[in-house]
Length: 345
Image 1 (cartoon, rainbow, N blue to C red):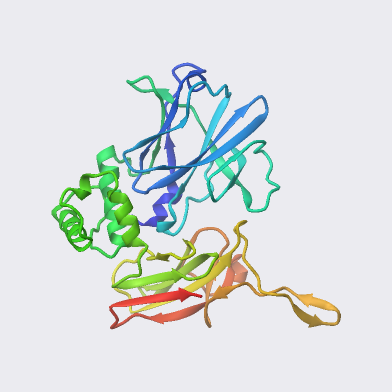
Image 2: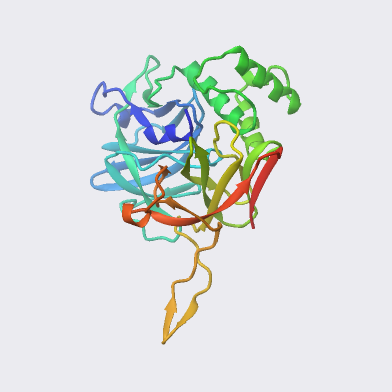
């Protein structure tokens, strides 16, 4: 399993016990995913909708997102992975689009988006069912169909791998290999022996995953803007490109990599609050016209294919002819080095 699993995000949702369960009770969302996610909620009533977010939900945990009598006819949710994984779920096969922004927000009249920094996102209608405590509950799940315990163990494995520890495979099985990686992490980060059982253990893992790597490959973003990055690597004689990874300002990110490749290919592009590429100042193109300003990017001369949405590509012979974008990647030699960091400045 890799970070791509998040694109197969599914909602494991039970049927309403009665049509107005959600309207009469607190509503909680529970996660059985191997990722830490944030959820935005949309409440729709009589043709109008309001959105608010973001609620962080850790694996094997629940979070109340609606309290008391909401009076809403319908509740929708949209989930995204934390930036440490490099990307969020692809637009879900949901039921409606509502307005959100990247930071914490509360927004009325969310059927339209006309503010700077806001964007439309796809939400999925949920019909929570009552659990044995009388709470209206819906679940986030993956194709792997983890139990609560397996989801937490798989999430720990995933973040350990990103932080540079050998906890593969990411399967939710607490093996001696996973225990060894946890023990090494606890010692090296000067934590208590019981740290792995505590609720804040994920915070320590995230902090470690965001530090520059002492081994392997990392991107570090030293700009004020979010950078969307793509990676290329050699696999059985072919070059595979994968993206997009979101590298937050002032943060580092280790993309998921299998094996020990000797050469990688890196590309990064700065984006604004609307997730559109930032561009440098316009240049004159002669004859009274102005050229399209180049994007603020970090790349090189190796031409490989990308596309605007999340992707993994292995055929780079005719990018344009295949409806893809020919993109210049920088070649990064990582053979014989303990750690390699590409800095976006």
